[in-house]
Image (cartoon, rainbow, N blue to C red; front, side):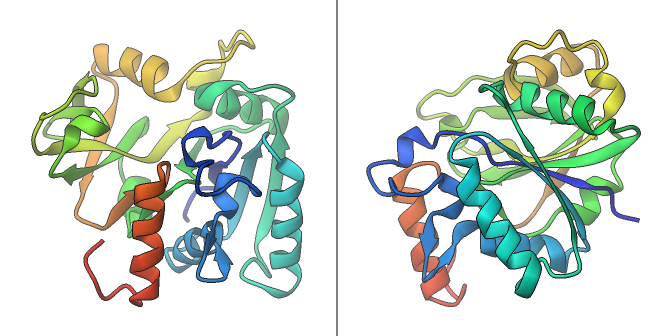
Length: 237
């Protein structure tokens, strides 16, 4: 059974505002549909039927979209929860807040709502948590590289130019509620705080995926995704 999927969808989308300013980043229009539509479609194909959307910025717009989709659209028949942060808590704080508010136990999946990943749900679900998915990029420097040996994350390398090809964090995780039990209520980052700590102690597992990946966080990549959808996914992403 595939675990519940927590969707990080509360960010401000600051870098994308020159191209998309009227709606939150997950609802950025792509060929007449929100970017989130394509993500949900892909997650459902991979077996997800229980979603929890972690919201903050323009949360009401995303809630309205989800409600509409649950009545007649993609999400009909799916179980949907939403958790709205009272203040921005970072990616780690958002998940910790949801774990506490919903009383989550055991393991669950976490994914970014601004990142397209062609596959990976099955693979990350089968990887021992805590775990992250990684993809190989020709220019890892823009994202920061992940150093993996066998199935364990050894270290993270900061973003820097001309880093060359390498593995990067793909924004898909398999986590357990117990790693958030000691949360003090303050904002923190999954990527910069929790994962660095887990990697330092040799506890963070990884799975390398060979699948299309794009983060629409900047206008250039957002328009590239729009072009890819326009081509009916026939061109290389």
